[in-house]
Image (tube, rainbow, N blue to C red):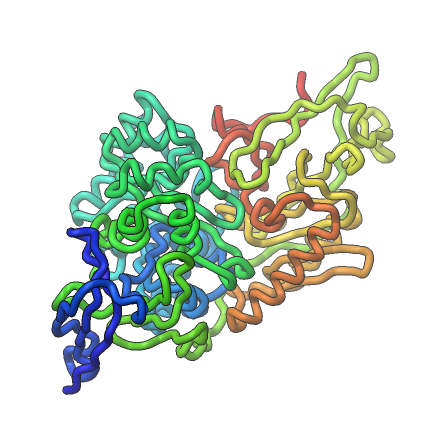
Length: 565
């Protein structure tokens, strides 16, 4: 057995000091990667790099990267991320236990540390069509397997507040196994927030305001500051880092491939340091708090720990030089040293091609009255939407050719009104149609089979012909994303459950980046058109969303008609 030595500056979190040291670890044999000793040498040495604990994404749906877990790992390692706390409920909504097993099996083929939870809400609601369900017995089997580390986000907060038998049984099951329970309660406050926390739910990643986050921290919950591709809450919540450094973690939640290629949790660390937050508080949030909260078997640079660490050349922009997983060097100078993994796709896809006629929105309207339409109002960097009531005169309207008593209501990009459609992909059906304000689209359409949480086909466009072309293109692929512009349909195939590619991460990121540019050329003013699109079917975040069954109000948990009485 040999011993490897690293000379570097290291951090003492207890004393909040930086010192130069030599760290030695066993580099082979049964104790591979275990830290043997840390020899204190002296004061911080400007000639040395800095060895810090690796970064941890405290809540992420790997499927949103459109990469296999093993490819997500390769991309994340370049940025100093050594582990993720991952909820597989995206693929579970499509494939059930088979999908979770797929994620577990693929993750075992990489040394990257992926800690999966048991999805608590599959399907997310009864108001949409999912491809599978996860029962209490399924969750119990996952817990008994020893491969699951927590109960994933409890999105059914009304069920918690109303003491639903099924919801409380899932929560109590996690307590029996002494596993953490993740939360999801956007905007919940007052007595409702108190009841939610009292049920044993210990985190929330849906806070968007300091007041909401502080209230939940006061109730004993940990707050995960989220900076993903669509939901970006760091700017609002970063004061929590200094106020409650023991109660905060960092997460991405959902990060698309082009952005993961560029950065990960390291960017939150850089941004927090630039805002003047204490180095040790920031790294506690990024590296240590997830280990404590989720009881993760990771090293934190203590004698006897596994060597899970990152070497950076400074403590300002944290440029990554090397990354270790259990003593194995897996990334150096921006190059990942892990090979890609080959897998066979699994899928659940039964949708049939649609016609333009099925996309027509025909409403019964009394021409003698002025009427308004419910429209989904979307916002940059937020998953919340608002209900916007728009006078029909703002749309392009005509008499329906096949139904003379009705009015055909169409998108009007000049007034920033475009059409949204969701099609059931698990059985033959007609699409549900609605309208969106705030996208900036001027022409064409985009479509995707990434549509939280049931992952039906979702499309947004300026005319029925473009929307039909986009939807039928992803049906041809049996899963993927598409941009329709003047030159035709452009796609990225996602053969694994309609969520993930089998290609290398670099290739997925490059193709996605091109599609993103083409989408923005349609006029989108959003920074992440496809990510925003994917959340317009997420019913558990208010106010208005669209499922394959119709326009849904997340405040009242009920369907609403397009036409306002």
